Amino acid sequence: MASVDPAPAEVAPEPEAPAEPETPTEPKTPAEPEAPAEPTEPPAPEPSAETPAPSPGVKTASALPKPVFKNVKASCGRDAGVGTKLKSFRLKDLEGKEVTNGRYRKRVMLVNFWGTWCAPCLKELPEFDRLYRRYRKAGMTLVAIATDEEAEPVKELVAKRKLKAKILIGGEAYAEQYGAPNFPFTYVVDTTGTIVGSYHGYKEDCLGKLEDDIRKALETR
Image 1: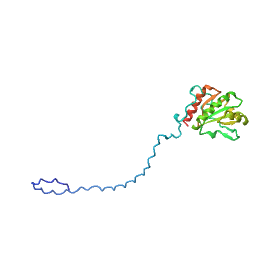
Image 2 (image 1 turned 45 degrees about the vertical axis):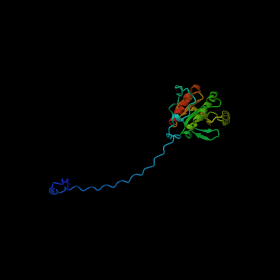
Image 3 (image 1 turned 135 degrees about the vertical axis):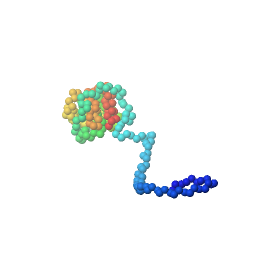
């Protein structure tokens, strides 16, 4: 029944009008039961300033050591083989153990073909070993494949030069598969097994570009 404002005290109340019949309404649909609240996970702790969270799978330039060589000559590293896959190998190390290229499939490889008889090779290899020491923790491996069949002369040279590279021997037949005219020759290989830099012969002024190829491959591994 509708409410009526009260009349002033001095006026007699009017008789109430008969109530109008209520209009029937549609039955209310029963309310659906509320879904239980989903449990909330506790918020992840924010990384502290001392230990920033790394981006998985990506190496930024700031995460790499500073480059050794400053001069990056754009014309270097474009010899035959760029864009092709590194050929599979199965060679022995200095202890006679068999090693395949698959062993390094998750790393950036610097594959160098050399020999103890090759004077330019002996100038270049220590420079490559220097780069290996600098970038191995970032995911780079130097695989130095000698054409020598006997391990002893190679062991003596490695000990004398204090090389840390992964040394393989008996690689002459494997080297011939590339048809390179001169020793040494070297490839920068990314983690997909693709040659991204090719260097035929010892070119001291190309070391900066070779290091740059390594860095770019590490940044995207």
